Image 1 (spheres, rainbow, N blue to C red):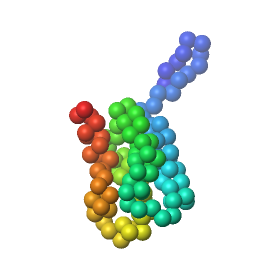
Image 2: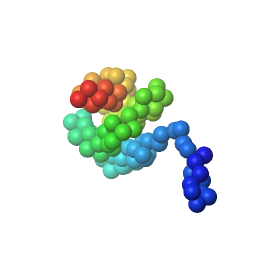
Image 3: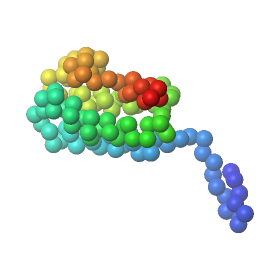
Image 4: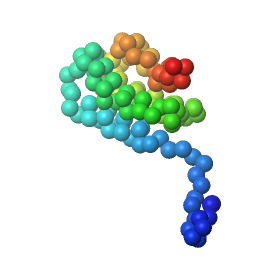
Length: 115
């Protein structure tokens, strides 16, 4: 705890927050599920990249998750999103991504770090 000169105290946090990115991404997945009933794979990819992936990429360099639990949380968002398509819901997660021609979020984070 840090003390300010006027007697007020400031709590020190050792945990970084995700800037609301994960909650907003989940909201976008629910919006897609609720409003787009009959999406082709190509339409889904377009909507997904614009509504969900854009939130997950926002400030990625600032809040870049490095723990396995944080990365798995992000991947859960994508898993939920790809289950929206009835054509893909019976496939494994990795096969869903191959059909959609998408990469995992972890891949994009590593790629972004290299760039």
